[in-house]
Amino acid sequence: MSDPVKYQLDEQQLPRFWYNINADLPVPMDPVLHPGTKQPITPEELGVIFPRAVIEQEVSTEREIEIPEPVREILRQWRPSPLYRARRLEQALKTPAKIFYKYEGVSPPGSHKANTAIAQAFYNKAEGVKRITTETGAGQWGSSLAMAGSMFGLEILVYMVKVSYNHKPYRRAFMETFGAQCIASPSNTTESGRAVLAEHPDSTGSLGIAISEAVELAVQRDDTKYALGSVLNHVLLHQTVIGLEAQKQLEMADAYPDMIIGCTGGGSNFAGIVFPFLGTQLRGGRAVECIAVEPTACPTLTKGLFAYDFGDTAHLTPLCKMHTLGSTFVPPGFHAGGLRYHGMAPQISHLAKLGYIAPRSYNQLECFAAGIQFAQSEGIVPAPEATHAVRAAIHEAEKCRESGESKTILFNLSGHGNFDMQAYTDYLGGKLKDLDYAENEVAMALAGLPSIG
Image (cartoon, rainbow, N blue to C red; front, side, top):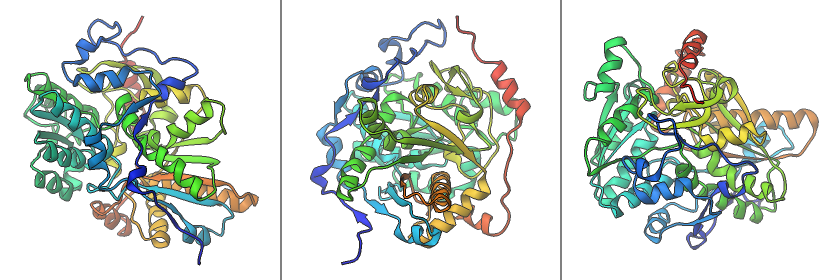
């Protein structure tokens, strides 16, 4: 029998608990602050936009939080997701490295985002919520919440960043198929959207702007809550099913990663695969190198400041201590729309500050080249966001070829690119170019950071 390329767990082996890294942090995180008073925010104040169960998870320091059985029942449709050994890619690279990837594109919406969408929809439904507002960049989160909303009988309203709204019509159609309403952001439907359009009529939008619009509507109705697809603690918590499964699958492969790689926009898929392994390290287990990969055109971890900032452009959200380029910064319109966010998850930012996470950035063209190289070897076309992780994995494997080291590399292939073929068409047609962020715009945005005593 040939060497295995796929490691599968039975659906009964789906994790029963999420892993909460707050339990193992060597230094506690800074508190989330109220946007008005600048004082630590209370659960009651967060309750305006989030259901109670989600708030409890956000502030919890329990190491394990039970996954409700109704959530596990739905997750079992595609989970546990497969772990692959990229043997053909290894051969193409002529590397002694062992490359494994966890493939999250097997979910119905095609990405890891469904892991938290199902959980958040469940908790909102349980508390009597009728409508959820949200934002989406490339559309993977919006697609996932649209699907989850249809399963729990919830009305879903999605503000999609305008550049992605125009780039990805099939993502819009996917959301609408599940009954969600999808609006290009900035829009004329909210005060925050109209304010942006008044100053920048041709704005391509940003996740910060879209969040402002979604939050603004959420606070106007008692039957409506807001849901976020990344960044916050509870979202990263829900994604740890990825790493928990990967730990069991690597045991089947008799392997343990020397390094773990994930793309980072808000940080959820990276945390999902990394945190269970990093938690093992923090409790005295084997050390791993954790590489967070972001676009050079939106270099939050590699160029941003670690400071308190708003999560949105209109300054409606609580203040979080995180790596940020400034909440008013609008990144250029590159194709990896899910990575166009000004801030990084506070947990990831905190761990990077402590030296447990190594950030790096790549340009758009080299990531697409890596995505095509991966597709031609492994048969899966990665989402533009995931090509950043692929690029880093190939880079590390090439370093092993030069050094002769046989390191074990694990990365998260967070989603497929089947709805992103226009991006590949543009790349193959020579229409894409590497984009630079405007340093003066970042400087202006950072100059406007809130003053915290």
